[in-house]
Image (cartoon, rainbow, N blue to C red; front, side, top):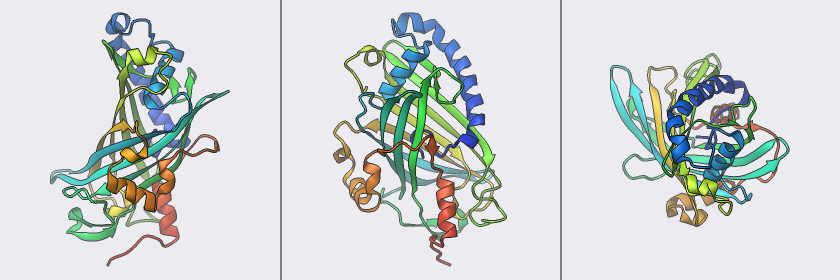
Length: 310
């Protein structure tokens, strides 16, 4: 998962933009009755106030690094066959915000590990139960960079005001992105790893924080809870080709207020050994760029780096 917007790029954003715009209308109407009494003098329909509240929940407007941890699960849904719990997951994302003439930049990177669904151990290989236990090499999701620009108004899919629900001291920002774009792994070139010539998936987000933190000028990084779900085609390392079915990711996220030392020990040790740069944010801005896991996997195939166990 790209912890800002997993595996999105500019070519794939138009469908997500339409979804976000529709959600703004629906959720704005839902919040209208409570926004006056519950949101007080924080006007979430004002693009600038909406933006700054969301940025405090998502990161730290002082520019300090924020490290996010997001445990979860992955299920498979196979039509007319059944539902299967395939993995536990654990993700680590590091990012920072910086104000710029064009808006608020986010510079981030993330890694998400696939874990044994029972023991929670980080997997190196996996026996795919959907392919009669076929052994495959696990390729963890690692996206670097995940860079975007948040703005107060405008036509970008990252432009505020973001859809929200407000009640009492609680605010929940909701982002829904429905992606339909050409696949990085076309079937004719990658028949074992491709789920089809179209990449079709959904990213569903909820970012919850407190109105009082959004209003407090002394708070630059507010406590928050973030929910992320993804409905997508098979991961390429599973070697499922275009077999019927989808994956459902479901994770919740928390900020590591004590830094990376708050990570579970085995996650921190593995990250320090294999993905150490993901424990801090990128420091150089190279423009709006969101690396895609499927594109990373394609490059690994082309370099002959995908392990085979036949």
